[in-house]
Every structure is written in structure tokens, then in C-alpha cells.
Image 1 (cartoon, rainbow, N blue to C red):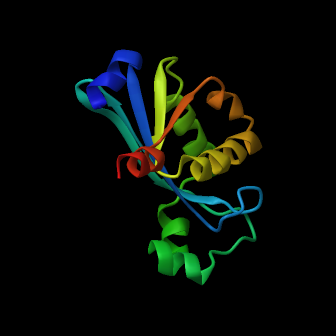
Image 2: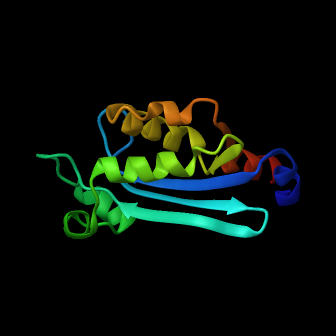
Length: 139
């Protein structure tokens, strides 16, 4: 399957997010990870903790679920603009396919994350593959 994707796309960006909840309009991305894959393998990758907005806290349930702690976000986290700029640059190639498991969830969060920083145009024209749909189809 991977070979057939490279007949249509120059590269794939496989991504995953961790968030403070499930509401993409009010909750925040706390981890953004992506790997850019070309025909010869991984070309670029990022895995960033993202600091919370001023006054926001990390729900204990999210720490239990993800293992991410408020201390990690504060000490290892980057500012939102840094994570957004790095991700936008990664998907800026015109013939890129975005791949995620349960892609609708990640895309909604990415859209609002990028839009707040006036970078949502990075998603225009990007093609998307939901790995969960492929998995369910093959099972």
C-alpha cells in the first residue's frame, strides 16, 4: 500500500496529537508529533510538548490517560507559535498526504490551533487519509 501512495504523493506526514480534552474549540493541543516520510524513509520528524495558555490547567484525567504532566508542559513545552510554525512548514510541500488515526479529531484540533495563530491556510488543499478507516475496512 505504501508504494502505491508514493505514486500519487511525494511525501506523507503522519501525525498525532494529545489534547486537554475533546472539544476542539475550547481544549488545547498539549503534544504535537509528526513524521514526514518520503519514498526512502523518514525525512523529518517532530515531537513537541506545547505549553498551555495562561491560566489553563491540565486535567488530572488527561495526565492519567497520556502520562503527560503539567511539569513536562512547563519545563519541556514550546510556545504554540513555535509548534504551529514547525508543523505548517512540514506540510507546506504541495504534494503531501496527511495521515492520522481518527483523523477528524486531529484535524479539528489542528485547524483551531493553526487558525488562532493565523496559519490555518497551511491546511488548504492538503489531502488526508484516516488510518482508522483503512484499518476498519481491512478488518
